[in-house]
Amino acid sequence: MTTPLSLNDIAERLQGYDPQALSARHVNDFLAQLVQPVREQESVPLMQAHGRILAQDVVSPISVPPHDNSAMDGYAFRGTELLTDRPTRLTVVGTAFAGAAWQGTVQKGECVRIMTGAIMPAGLDTVAPQELVKVDGDQVQIPPGVLQAGDNRRLLGEDLMAGQPALRAGTRLAPAACGLLASLGLPSVSVWRRPKVAYFSTGDEILSLGEAPREGAVYDSNRYTVAGMVQALGCELIDMGVVRDEPAALEQAFVDAAAQADAIITSGGVSVGEADHTKAMMKKLGDVAFWRIAMRPGRPMAVGRITQGERSAVLFGLPGNPVAVMVTFAAFVRPALQQLMGWQAPALPLLKAKSTEALRKKPGRTEYQRGIVSTNAAGELQVRITGNQGSGVLSSMVQANGLIVLGHAQGNVAVGDEVDVMMFDGHL
Image (cartoon, rainbow, N blue to C red; front, side, top):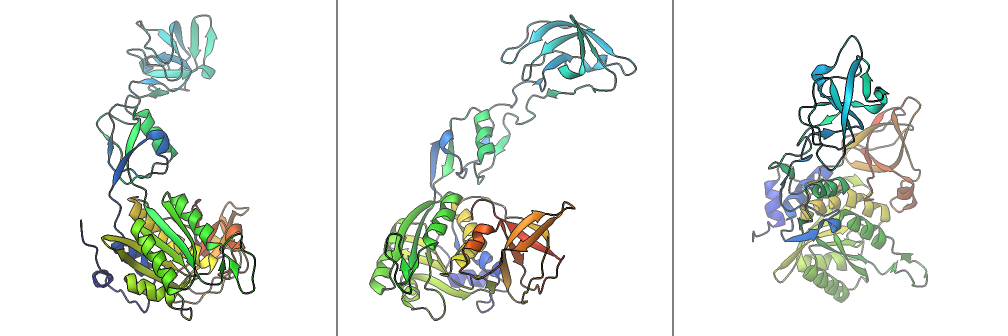
């Protein structure tokens, strides 16, 4: 097993890394070096494979479709017989149904009634859809100019050819991919083990659901947003609840988490001015860096590893404010967990939308503002903010359908200016 790089080793590999001036790019580059994908494989039935990450390339054992077949209900004939200056007249000599090859021969001037998916009879290469032809007994007429030779025929192997790669390792098995594997007749598939992600909230002011309200305390929303985001990605959640800001309790929580998880996520306890028990315990038990990232919301963050015996878990110490937790998860934790899963996932695309209002922005930090994206009368994307952008206003994340991403060097935005938007995709 490869020895993980220390945080200092990673920092030395990254040109331009400056822990005093961290941009979002620095953080993602750092995490890409820090996170090692899981490498345990398991075979699962295809019906249980949705959302899993493919561990091996799948080579198609058959061609799909396995033969030339009709894409339409209609009449199969030779395309060379099409006339361009008058109707093409053909005599129907049989019917080809899906599921069995039609047994017969077709002479010049003849055609076969054919159903969608039926094997194309030998020598025939074109299908006239039934709605285009005029039928009179066993005679059909095809108007000129409506078809070309080869129309409405699906070719053998046009989807997949036997012996060719069908899906690559690292592919997430979404519904279409599962259907593709089923079309190859594969009842099971080799996937990477689901990473185990432990989560706990920290702080004496945090209430678990069911506890009575008390002055100065708030109910733990982060536990439920993080749980939802982790599970939506396809990781296995280890819910460790709320841990009080006490050294013994925190140490036990980190030890227990590192003993069973591949990654640990916490919220709270990493900001300047907070009680330092959480940070002290992270330092004691692991190799951890504490950052102040040039972003809003979500400036404070801790990353590193917590080690317990021979096991090592990647650590993400997120800020405590609810929106900051969700934004830092979307910007940093999500791509890191995708790498941990072995998922070769492309970065979420940024769309361009016109701002319907002026936005204040200071250069020198990346801002993620909650936005509502819609289409204007001209068919263009437009976006407006949800209102109060405070990092504790969780209702704004419910109202939003995307994040307005204002870049590190970007300044104020005027009405009508284009801005980048990261659309939510079901993981937030």
